[in-house]
Image (tube, rainbow, N blue to C red):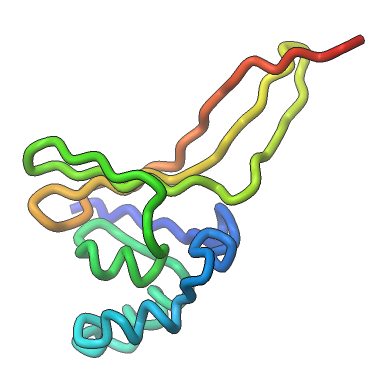
Length: 125
């Protein structure tokens, strides 16, 4: 199986993403799930890295509470927004909002995708 990895540190600062929640507080909250992991996996979660095959508890530990959850039968999508919008001004005047979508099927991660939402941006000249 091709195991997709993503480090949220490459996308954004986890502290801002989680609000008042920290990785340490989420580890305490999900202590049984965290204690059952290998030291390598524990370190990966502390750094905000998730991968296909992870459970919702592990994603929660690494990334915190998602901003949006969508359920469709056995498939669940957790969406995380970037805490600050990144604007790229082009000739078309487009804004880019980055985030991450984590797809679960039957209780495990089956997909991780960075998202880009493009919105028209009107400039005054």
